[in-house]
Amino acid sequence: MIVSGKSIQIDRPNPIVDVDVLAYKRRMDPLDAVDALIEGDYVLIVDYFSSGLIVLNALKAYLKKAYPDQSFQGQRDYRARFRELSHRLLLLVSNNKLTVRKAPEIGWLKSLYPDMDEFLLPFPQVQGLNSSWQWHEKGIFIPVLGRKIRPFFGTYFPTRFEHLILFDKWLKQYVGEKKSAIDVGIGSGVLSLQMLKQGFGKLYGTDTNPNAIAGVNEELKRYGLDAKVELMHGDLFADCSEKTELIVFNPPWLPASHNLEGIDMAIYYDEQLFPRFFAEAIKHLKPGGRVTLLFSNMIEITHKDAEHPIKKELAEGGRFQKELLLHKGVKAASNKTQRNQNWRAEEQVELWVLKMI
Image (tube, rainbow, N blue to C red; front, side, top):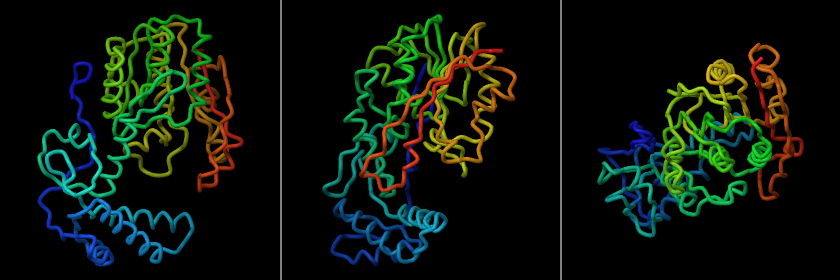
C-alpha cells in the first residue's frame, strides 16, 4: 500500500500453505480433534463454520481440567496452551472467502490477501478478522467528532471517551498558533481529526503500526482531509523533520511486564519509551511550542511501585516544565464485566501540557 508517497507493508495473520491436515466434520467426536491437536496435527474444518466452535469448546473444557490452577501463573499457562493448540485448527480460504458453510463474510480476506487465491488460516485468527470486520463495517461513533470512524484491522481504537472529551475541552481553549502539529502514535486518528476540526492547518501523524497508518489514510480520504495530514510509518517521530507549535501524544498507559508485539504496543510501554519521546520531542518544537500528553493515573493505582513517567521527566529530565494539568474521572465499569475493576472508581484520565524550560 502507498501512503504519503511511500510503500508500507500491512500486517495480517500469516497464511498457511502446504501442510498436512486431518479433516473434521461435526458428526465426528470433537475429542478426537482435540487429541489430534495435542499430538501436533493440523485439523481442518471442512463442513460448517460452527463445527470449529464445537472443537474449540471441547478444547477449552479439556484444558480447564488439565490446568486447574486458578493463580495468575496458572491461568497464564492455560491461555498459552490454548493459543498454541487452537491455532492448529484451520479453515480454508479460497477466492477471498471461507469455504465452509454458514461462514461469515469477511471483507479483510480480500483486502489483506490480494496476492493469494487459496490458503489456510487458524480458526481463532479468522474469528479476530471477523470481529474486526464487523467493527469496521458498523463503525464507531465518536462523540467529540460527531461522526463515526471505521477502524482498520489490527488497529487500536477508543472504546472509552473521557480522554477525548478532556482533549476537546483543552483544544477549544487553545490560543497558540495552529499552523501545524505532530500526532505521535496516531492510532485510529481521532486526535488528529479533533485538531483538524478545531482549525489546525497541517498535521504530521506517525505510528509504528503500519495498519494504523493505512487505516487513518482511508479515514482521511473518506472525509476529504487527506491533503491536510502527512502520514509516516515509524517509531515515535519516524522520518518527520518538521518543527511544530504542538506535539500531541496519547501513549500507552501501563508499563509492560512482557515482550511487546502487535496491538499490545498501544496498551503497554517499555521503560525507554518516555525518555526517548521527551529527548526527541524537544528537537521538534518551535520556540514557545507545547507538548500535550494524554495519560492516566492508572499506573499509580495498579502499579504502586512504578514511577509516573511524566512526573519523572519533569523531576529529572531538565527539558520541560508543567504548564497545565487537567483531570477527568472515568465512568464506572459495566456490571456485565467479569473482571474485578473496582480500582476504576479511583481512575482519572490526565491531560498534561508541557513547555520547554
